[in-house]
Each structure stands twice: as structure tokens, then as C-alpha cells.
Amino acid sequence: MRLYRYSVRVNRSLLLVAGAALAVVGCGAAPHAAKPDAAVATHSPVVPSTAPPTTAAVYPLTGLPVSNADNARRPALSVKIDNIGAALPQAGLNQADIVSDILVEGGLTRLMATFQSQDASLIGPVRSARPVDADLLRELDGGIFGYSGAAPGEIAPSKAHSTALLVSNDNDPRWFWRQPGRAAPHNVFTSTALLYKAGRTLRKNLPTAPQLFSYSSTLPAGPAAHTVTIPFSGLSTAGWTWNGHSYLRTQNGQPDRLVNGARVTTTNVVILSVTWRPTHIIDDAGNADPYVIVIGSGNAWILRDGRVIAGKWVRPSYQVPVRLLDRTGHQIPLAPGRTWLELQPRPYSPAFR
Picture (cartoon, rainbow, N blue to C red):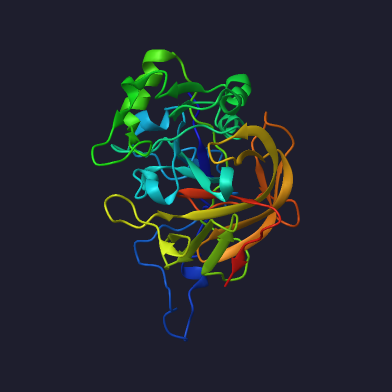
């Protein structure tokens, strides 16, 4: 079991009370005079404390204090979620620790929602895997990956090096269900309870989710930015607006709402400028499936607390996680809380105001 802790050092100072020899005479009482029963300090040397720093356990994927020790020991649980108009509204996104927004065929996007600290009784609509999933899963030490089918070329990278337990509705539907009132293929749903049960049933000793990012409640320097627009193509645009407490999501200019009517929200928005290459996987409409590249480096923008911090992302290989660095090469901390990763394809850039 891995524990994730942030140190909080308690500095101690010694207040020396000099006693009657240092009393102020003729000038009245000192503004902060010691009480009559205060202890008189001696002149013994001050010995620095050797006690270890006070620490608090936090969830690895949010940096928030642990409220459920069992959840904190769980593996990462990732689910592929449809993100086109016919699939809306979605379920479970506000319970995910991390959500990745990724370009797919036809200029559309699809989501990967990753859970660990919270549970969700309804997640979906669940859709098929894509090649980039392997590299995103590897950052999470694999964990559990729930999806609804995939062409052989789409799932091949995940089989090759994601290290994830692959749980597919097409191959093992007992971990999913068809939601009434939804048209196929946008009617496959699941829950964290079912997929974590799949993990316990199908593979023993899955690793605890690792820490991906640095977290700090101290706000890094950066200009104010209350709104960002993130184009993915001529057909898909995401947006976020800071409301003073969290970021509210829009999609194609419309408020993004879940099945219960709540707005999609997050604590942090991390935008990574990425490249992609075409594949030989073609959908029914003749669109090629892009292979989004999250290995290498590129520009990055981190939105937190109503500000934007510009930097870069660096990931030399799929065997190590991405690092978010500022202009001086120091790691950029996120605010403790949930995070959305917007994998914006070049040459598009975000617009802030």
C-alpha cells in the first residue's frame, strides 16, 4: 500500500519573559505585558525540535485529505465515455478524480473518466476504446479499464503496454447494463461498484493508484483568466468559466449538464498541446481514427483559482508520467481537487479572457 502525504511543519518560538529586572518603570504597563502567573524563562540554550513533521494522508489523484481509507488504497478505475450530442446527458463525471478529453474520428471527442476517491452509481454512456488509452492508463499503473468494445487496432496498444485489467462490455457484459430510454449504442452504463467488483474477481493485487500531479493550496503566480475556449476541430469546442469556487464546463457553446441537471465542474483545468497521427482504422462514415500522442513535450496551460499558469508538459516515454513545468523548470502544483485534462490537438490554441 502506498501512502501519499504532504508535510506541514510546525515552527515553535520561545517567548522570553525577563521578569522584574526588565520591567518598564515610569512608562506605564507594556501593551502586551505578561500575566502575573506567567512562567519566567531561563537562559538555557534552545534545542531545536527533532520531532517528525506533522503529515496528513491525501488521495493520490486529487491531493485532498483522505476521508475513506479503503478508497485511498484502491486502484485507478478508468471508463471510456461517449461525448457526442446523441450521447448527452452523461453520468458520473463529477465523481471522477480526473477526466481526459480526447480527439477521436470526425473531429469529435471522447472522454476517459478516472475514479478512485469517490464512487458513482451511474457512469456512462460507455463507449469503445482508442489507441491513446494505453499511454494514459500506463500513467495510472494500469488499474481497471472499462469500455464497450474496440476494433483490434484500437485496443492493441492497451493490451501491449497499458498493464490495465481490460473489462469490455462486448466480452464480459455482466459488469455493465443497458439503460432504459437510451438508444444504442449510447445506452451502455456501469458503476464504480460493478467495475471494482470486476477488479477483485478477475485480477488479484491490483496496484493502488499512483500520484500523478503535485498539489498545493498556495496559488502560483499567473494572470487572471476567468474563461477559456478550447477548440478541438471545426466541430468540437470545450469551454470553462471560473465562478469563484470552481470551473463550469460548456461544450460547443452550451452549458454541459449531467443526467441530474447539474453542471459539469472541476477544480483544475489542464490543457496540453498535443500532436496526433492518422491510423488505418476507419469508421463507418469513412473517418480515420487519430492516434493522439501524449509522449514527448508541448505547451501547457494550468487553470486554477481563476488564474492561468503557462508552462510545458514533458513525458519522455510511456513508462513515466507527464510532468507540468513552469518557465523555470519547476513543477506547477494543482489545487487540491478534481482535474480535467484537455488534450488539445495542434495547431489549435486556447483563448483566455
